[in-house]
Amino acid sequence: MTSEKPALILIVDDDYDFLELNRMILEKAGYRVVTAAEPQQALVKMAREKPDLVISDLMMTTLDSGFSFARVIKEHPDYDDIPVVIATSVTSALGLDFRPRSQADMVEMRIDAYFDKPLDPARLLSRLAELLEAKAGGSSAREATEGD
Image 1 (cartoon, rainbow, N blue to C red):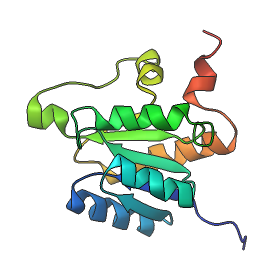
Image 2: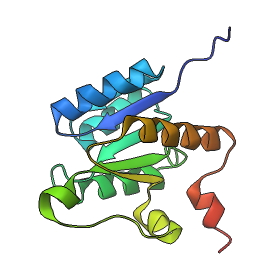
Image 3: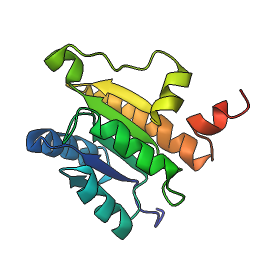
Image 4: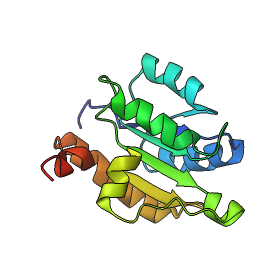
């Protein structure tokens, strides 16, 4: 048995039900979870304990709050190695399609994964495991594309 703490996942969303449902799914999978209702609150929590991964809603205080938050994370020297996952219902709710079409789109958006809501727990857990494993190995989407 190791003394290593389970990965800490920060979920940022203004929908309490989404936060609680996904907190339970992630905790059942063995992750530690902290939640925030909006990006500023999330940054305060990040200053207390750096998360290993962030899942953020796209549309909170503004239409692109999640992308703005992802940019803040990826441009901050203390947080730039944190994988960022966007989870949104903007396509089904408003008919807007922000889905990345290529790795270049992901890099431009400053995100490491994108999910439409409702989230498929098995798919989400699989992708989170991949992102956390890649982070532990020192790789990221940005590093993989810097030579292009």
